[in-house]
Image (cartoon, rainbow, N blue to C red):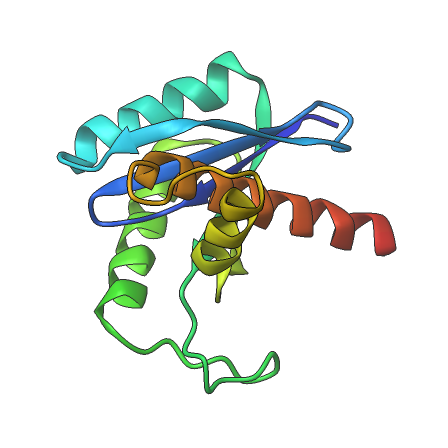
Length: 145
């Protein structure tokens, strides 16, 4: 069993989080400025290799009105994430799974507020915290099955 990489994709920044190899803990792993898709893909590919990651999860911004059974992908961001996931699968050799990220950024902001971190100056923190929360939830679901 290897580590899991979690990606919170944004048009400006991409938040990253990684699990330990035992898949017990989720840690923030930085933010990538999303200026050039090829550079982003190259960075993630290197990270997957260097950290011996064997699963990547990517948050998908499902519509708030859709349920867990019939998720509707609506909006430009969902389409952008779909394109990103398709390109990512072309460059890395590990499994890529899409996970529901509805409210992940909101939850990340709330966690940071609880810690007394200013939201005005913490955009990068929000992105990697959102990725960490996605990963934490994913790990919990694995444990339950």
